[in-house]
Image (cartoon, rainbow, N blue to C red; front, side, top):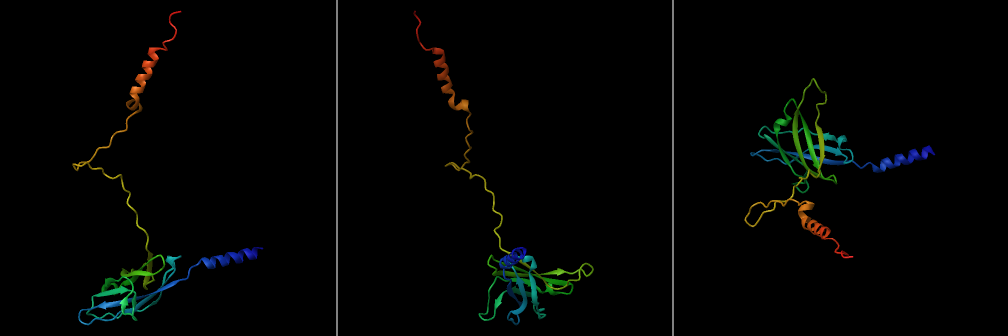
Length: 194
């Protein structure tokens, strides 16, 4: 009995776990003298169910010419020779000695790459031994929505209309109290002369 429950729980856990997706990130040195085609930079594996477990499966340190001070990062398709995602431009100083590249990839709810970015993080050799490149995968989310007040009512003159103050019970129905008092004081007019 317990074996079947354990087996069914294991099967359920395996079906819930989504398949990891892979994104191929490219880099292109930007140079005015001789333009270069984008080169493979990193291969990233990520799972939308567990974004914290995203890893870099392959990384090629870029060969950047000295004439280039900027690089473009994104997903590039060499077959159609166009960028498939949004690109960002980063300084080549992100690859300088003492810096570790961190690749930030933005994906939509289906897992398609929207854009990629690069930032060099300064390494403190006394604090960590992990000098390799890192990846951060972010999903698009709906941002916080503003809380709106009541709309401002403007008169024909363009001036703000003041709200009317709610009247109290006595202010609304004073005349009914007057009628009730008049009827009570006037009496029934019944038998007086017996």
